[in-house]
Structures are given as C-alpha cells and as structure tokens.
Length: 160
Image (cartoon, rainbow, N blue to C red; front, side, top):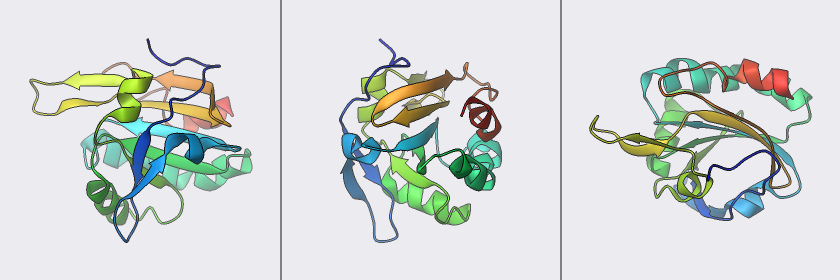
C-alpha cells in the first residue's frame, strides 16, 4: 500500500552522494527532528528530470527554505556515483542533497514505484514530492505517468 499523509516513513538504507563517494545513511536519521522536502525522479540525466524537475528545486531552494524547510532531497533509483555526477553537471551545490535509492529500498517500502520494464529502464521511483516533518509525511503529491504538474518546486511552495 502506498504511503499516505500522516504515516511514518520507513527506516531503510539510502546512499547520499558526496564528492568523496557514496555514504550510507539511514532514512530515519535523515528526516529526524526537522522539516524536509523530498522529491523523486525516475532517473538522473533524463529529460524532464534534468530540464525541469531538478532545476526548479535548485532555483527555488531559498524560497523553500524561507518556508521553514531545513533541507531539500532529490531521490532517484540510480547509484550514488550517478547522482554525484548529475549534481556536478547541474551545479547543484548545497541547494539540494542527492539521494541514491539504487536498491529501491525506499521506493519499494513506500510503494512509490514506476514500472518502466520493457522500455529499457526497469523499475524506478515514480515522480513525486513529499513534505516530511520528523519522519511523518505531511504532504504527498504523486504524478501520473509521464506528467509533470503536481511535484514541481512551484507546486510544493504552494503546499508549504
């Protein structure tokens, strides 16, 4: 069953992309005691993700922070090396923390999966955005396949 507003996030291992390589982190620790925005994309370097989704959050990071958000996370079902390369290519800097869910631990546990098998992409994270306060989901907007309407930085700003 898909995670819903009011529920607690699963505690799983993710990998944070760092200039020194992947760092394993427990999701429970990432979200503990603070307000974060997590947006997920089907894949790094893919068109909508690179042209619209990630750049929107980079450009709106200060406005999102001004709404009381402690950190913005971008999650993709890629490995941490790819996520770091994407962060470098997009000049992410400190505006967004890149999280790798290459084993689909978080994606499967939240049931926010997109099945792109047969298209050469396998199983991926769906495109969505959530606001999490101390490990509890307070806002969740999941895109229909192929859409980019409810998970943008502008949309989450309206929900904060």
